[in-house]
Length: 106
Ligand code: FES
Image: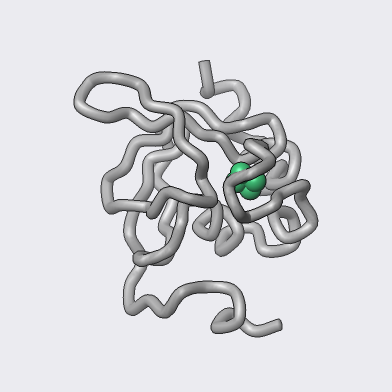
């Protein structure tokens, strides 16, 4: 499977702040695709429906000083977006990527 089979076409990477750390992900793709871009094997093997039904991909984004839970598979990543909390399943699936952030999440 090539990148073009998985990701929507993109020309550049944008920066998310995930649990306070900057991570570069493809523009014009969902937050969950962004995590998949960074940890292809882990997220591809995770328990994700990719269509808004399982809720395993829930993340909390900071929005105008408030916290807003969204589904990462249904929400486009945006440059500078703050992700304050991530679901247990994302954390488990992308442990190689996010494990080091565990102690900084609270
Ligand atoms: S992956 Fe199932 S709701 Fe997002």
